[in-house]
Structure formats: structure tokens, C-alpha cells
Length: 252
Image (cartoon, rainbow, N blue to C red):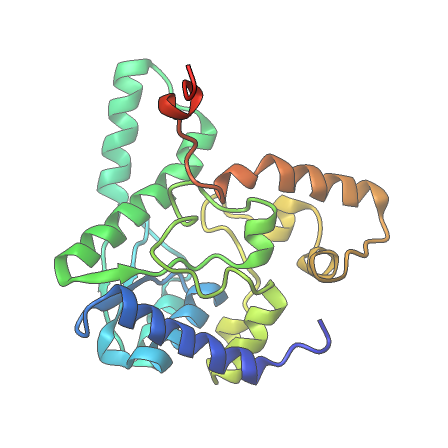
């Protein structure tokens, strides 16, 4: 990881974004990004502005009722000078939860945690289709490696600029872009259950990133834990499984 060239990575990523839009969108299509105020959405927004120009980037802020750090999200869009919308998902969230409880009598804690992420992705696609655009995925390699995302929530999108960068590399790109340090260096949290990522994971991104890049990890029990988590969550990155009747019956 010591030989990571943030300047080169920034240049090549912005070029890739520009080329992707040239091939997969019209010249006026917008890039739509969910802005949380964390480093990943901040860096993706910065890269897209650099690649496409601020007039083609839209930020969408989606608090679920009250969001303690929403000022960070506002700082992102203000710093970059992009258009943005604040769409509070609380009413939709509450309505769905109530309807599930009325019909089933209960709702699981995990459903309550993941529902906001899925509502936010639905909102992003609605905004994207309204203005004509493409939705940016903001996950990074470290999160994807261990499945630290919500399936059909923040794990999806039309293009993913950070998917092959670890958290430390994302931070380096953010500094290279000249983005506010307090946003780029912000301690990551999932925005769902009120804990930091590392509180939930019970290991540091630094240890995980070194393992991803070099294969080295001192704690063998931790290695086992990470390997098991990686294998268990690979389904989030793979295409949806399909049954092919014609392949199964070929030659009969």
C-alpha cells in the first residue's frame, strides 16, 4: 500500500468516469449521488465533478427523520458547488414498517436497519429517472470484501469508481482532490445503527486493508473471521443466480 500513487489513481479514475459516461449515457445525462457526509460519497462526488463538471452532478441528501451530521453532507455539496436535493425518507420508512407490523405482527431488527438503505437507493433511481442520469455506487473495496453493505441498498448503482480502492486509498484520493480534511478523514459509520464501522466489525480497516493488499495478517483467528465473512458475503457482488432450463436439458 506504500507505493499507492494517489495522483495517478485520481487521474485515471476521473478518465474512466468520463469514458464510462460517454459510452453509457447521453451528453446531458446527470450523475446522481447519495451524499451522506462520509468520505466515500464525498470522494465519489469530487471525482465525478472533476470528470464531468459540476453542472452534471446532482447530490441527494436522504435523512431518515433527524440526521445529526447532515451539515457534513451540506458541506460536501456546497464545497463542490453542485445542485442538491434533501429528500427525507422518514414518512416512507414509517409507513412501510407500520404496514409490515399490521400484516405480520412483527418486524426484525435487521429489517429496520437495512430498510433505510434500500429506500435511499429507490429514491436515487427515482431522481435519476426524473432528470435523466446514472446512479453512482459509493462502496469501496474494503467494505465490499467483507460484505459491509446492504444488498439492493448502497451495494448497487450504475457505476462504481471506488470498488477497487481500500479505505486508506480512498482517503488519499480525497486529499489529492483537495476535499475538506474533516470530511475525508471522518471516522466511518454505517449511518444505520449509530455505531462506527470498526465498532461493528471489531477489527480495524488498517488491518483489513493490509490483508487485502499483501495477504499478511498476524492474528490467525482474525484471518479466519475475515475469510469467513468474505466467503459468506460474496453473493452480494455476484449477479443474481438464474436457473437455465435449456442448459439443464441440453442433449436430452
